[in-house]
Length: 470
Image (cartoon, rainbow, N blue to C red):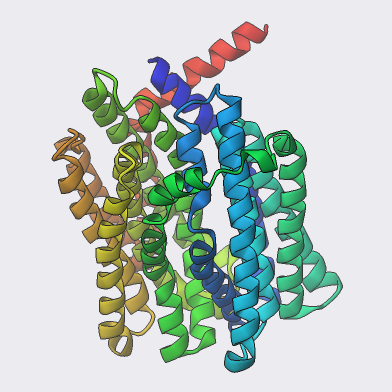
């Protein structure tokens, strides 16, 4: 019970900030779709996509290594100083190398909006380092506030740039960079990182040790980039920036869903790593994993059931072609949740190579299916290839993890999800509002029924907190 309470507490803290930021982003969707053409929005989204490709190449995923190795001994301040000082120093060197290399190739490639790719990637490197540093220290509140600042500042500055200054696409780039600067300043002030950094604590041997864990994560992240972002590149190349803008809007909804899982993943990966050697590990992991999957399945189905009513109200009519893609992408992200639940075992085992190998297989499937179908079914090729990639990756990791750790999905959970998901596929596309309203009611009942125990536990925790305060 203590482990579940610990997981629930950490998740609740992280969720507060994410709920606020997701609400802000949702409310601003009508603004973005009204102010920007599909082409402009597609270009902006593509630049963000390319920055996510460059980020692991520049950072070597050292921030992930920092967090994982800090978990081994949270009370050892000296060890934390060595880890943080070493990785921050080498990250700075890598950023300098990135700037030099970019300056050399820019005259040859003539990359549009090159300043954004340089500045955004460097800011992300240091923000990621400090975000994982505060996680390693157990400062979940600081992590949550930083996430809130990043999203809120981005949204507010975007509105100012577009609606008041009328800067268009350039305004989006500048305001997004400024938001990252504000986030970095907050993290520097709130993390207390200055007292942990010392030139004397920089140890090349420590860099080599953590690099052996982190560097195999680079191809893993590149594989994730292929799964998540190659679709946009292929759509832009074959169908144009306007089509990519439509596909990007469709992804907004599935991204909201998976972002809520990413909150849980922060706590889940920490909990699994801390309790991996417990005597009742398999029982705890199986019960908790099934409960969490049911929760996110209910959330996914709930979004699908709400979308026929929500989409026409919040999204401008010129983006109406995004609607058919959303269900496919939401189901793809549901399999991504399953992938993530099993991936935390590899993190606990410090088996980064296995993470990379399985992710690369999914990336190959994604890009192959996309290229084979793009000329035949157009934008649908991107969403279908994403679903195929995550479905394959789930099966691979499910089989592999269960060779060493018993974490199997319960048959009742699988059957319930198949029936609910299959039924919603019909109601989503049927166009009959009465049938869709009935499906929404059924989905709510399903969500309550499958998660009753978790809801009951949450109510008990809230009442206990209120009673103690009283």
